[in-house]
Figure: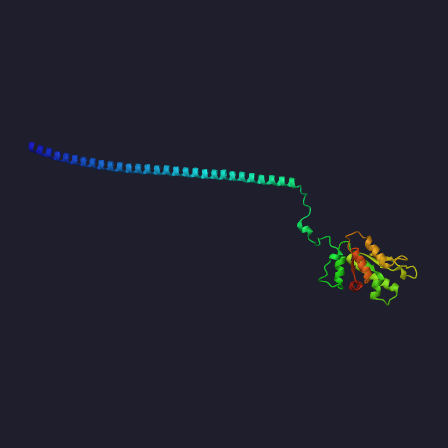
Length: 276
């Protein structure tokens, strides 16, 4: 029985030693795991600390950049303000000097510009003398149309000078009627004022004549020629009004031209009337 008890005791001791070995191995594994865990914790802490440090450095750099940007903007504003101030002072100095010079010279206000001194024709101030004839012949009816298109144009016709140029073989009364009929149509087409002058010396008796619409018919008084009556009509017009005188008589043409009218040949009017 004693031997059996010893054997059981030995067996129990072996089991105990085995258990103790297992416990030691377990404790060693636990210590190793704890050490590894601590290493991981240490590494994580170090990485966290490094990240926090980098973040602080980036924030510091960003703050420095913002400060530098604001300083640059402020410098630009201040520099521009200084330049503006200097420029304004310079401009004020120039203006004050100019005003002082103006007072010293006492120059009158400018009413005429250099372009005003150039000889030319302004719109609305064209006269019969200003109508260009380089592209039109003096016998081209279009020239008469241009003249009559001037504002408030007045056409004065040397009646018998025209009729005796165009149809001299007709009786005087027929000459007058034909000319006045053509002038009436021309007046209706152009709207220009028209006056036809006949020499009263040609009359053997009073003329019973109803002037056509738009045409004024005048006969010279005894002792006054039609030429003189035409010159009186031209002189009666205000300066600047377009007056066109139709006559082939050189003396009439020269006289009315000196008075400011534009003379044209009778043939020109006859050609124009032939188109109506």
